[in-house]
Figure 1 (cartoon, protein in one colour):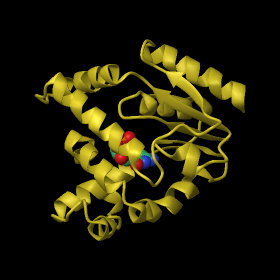
Figure 2: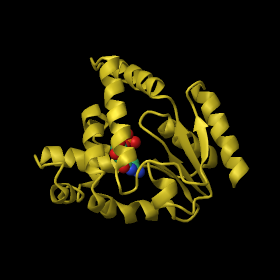
Figure 3: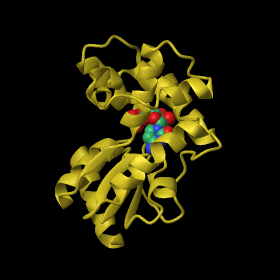
Figure 4: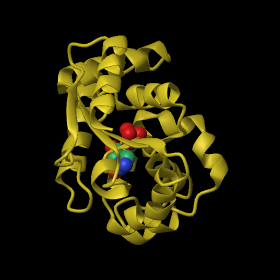
Length: 205
Ligand code: C5P
């Protein structure tokens, strides 16, 4: 069974995807990490993220890069959304994600284009969303709990800018697949969101 989980930044898609993978005992891939690894490599090599050729050169990152805590930085998330808009960067990461999705036994993947590009044939597609204010509040709390000093307004502005860039790019924009089930987690606890997600998958497979 292939489960595709898409949605904007800090919507809860990662938490839900991990819980689904546990529930169905499937391997899970957070595809955002791949774009974050490209972003971190661009920064480390002092390349220009707005130049497609520079960003493509950074797609050849070391496997170890995926485990680097630096990938979780807000700055890297921002940079990831710049490099991910280049069609050749998306093309460079495509097969790896498709292979993961179509491995024997299935998988859970979360990102922005899983249901539309990586696995349009997924057995269940969820599009997770929450209001930008609620996404920003969650992300802000998470950052504060990790010791970062950043204002709520800054987090909200960054999330809005990132989602606008992700939704408006021409290659693989952030949009729900036609056959995706929409799950709004704005007023749901984590537990309730997970329960709902499982019910939606059950209804679709
Ligand atoms: O999900 P996460 O916040 O880690 O993603 C970082 C950035 O990577 C996103 O803002 C988006 O630009 C990009 N991304 C993407 N397609 C995916 C996953 C992430 O374009 N499937």
